[in-house]
Amino acid sequence: MTLVEAEKKFCISIDALKQYVSFGFIQAKQGKNGVEDYREQDFEHLGLIKTLSDAGFSTEEIKRFLFLTENTGTNEEQIYMLRKHRCSLLENIHEKQQLLDQLDFMIWNKKKQGGAL
Image (cartoon, rainbow, N blue to C red):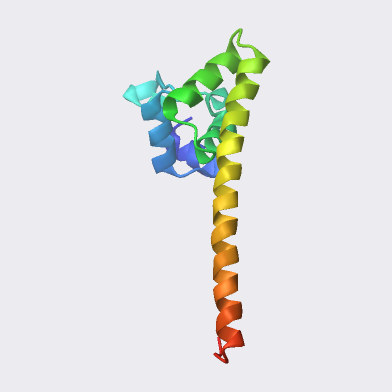
């Protein structure tokens, strides 16, 4: 399977796939006519990788998480990594909620003063 075929099958942009290749998450075998060939199972972890990346995991943290998943890693270490990023995301949510509250107060205050929004 080529990256173009994988892009269509898994609905992941070619740029994202190339980035995953550059990070070493997906590895090609040399196919016919020198064209890089990927096995379907090479793409099985892409959803997991995307979720970890979106959650703020660094490339090295993703590699470590995948290593623990594929080898003799303990669940405790993976759970620790997940909880660490969960706390970070939750803190970010709380900061955004505070900003929303401040904006809501400003809107309320302007309406109270007779302004139309």
